[in-house]
Length: 60
Image (cartoon, rainbow, N blue to C red; front, side, top):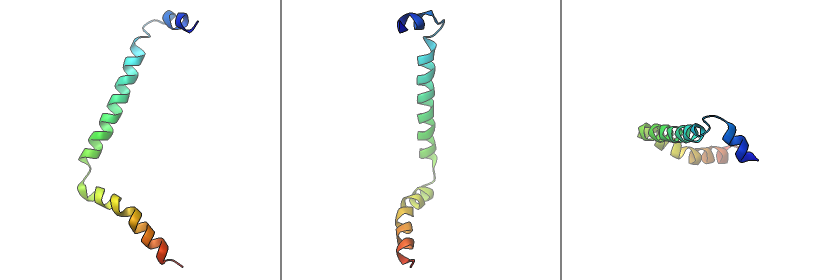
């Protein structure tokens, strides 16, 4: 039943291609954003969990 419904839709073969392109472009954008991020910002973000632990232990 579903096959007949999907076959009746014109140009349906383009939807998987469009969704794959959106998926690839999104993760390519995230990858490029992460590669262009400054090293100082990465080091700061990496040390944040340890800094937070020190702050919570010193509070009464």
